[in-house]
Image 1: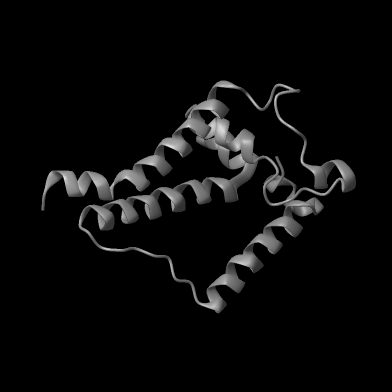
Image 2: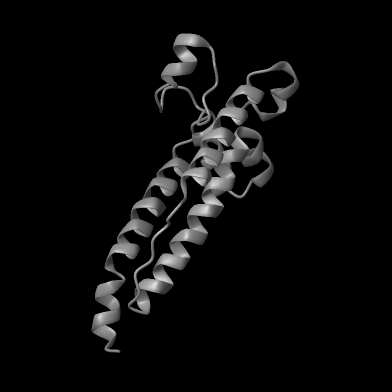
Length: 135
């Protein structure tokens, strides 16, 4: 396997990593806890209901600055998403380096389970007993 061929196959995973790293670097330096830097969630603003993404920027900021407890407190589901993304990206990169294709192929039951998890997370974090999931 020629090093040039491997490098060419790794261009897209490297570009994705660079883009995600740049986004995290930005959120790590521009604190979402300071008002005025980021827009307010439209669902929260219009209805007062926390969406599954509410607290995601604060979670990313805490995660990138090394405060895992604050990251989980701001949006635990987002932290799980960061870890899942990292594992998927790593698997994709290894497969690309080996010249293999890699795809995530979820069955409809798995997609429904992910959707149900998002709905349950959203409902629970908006109820009094689930306030510990709210940012």
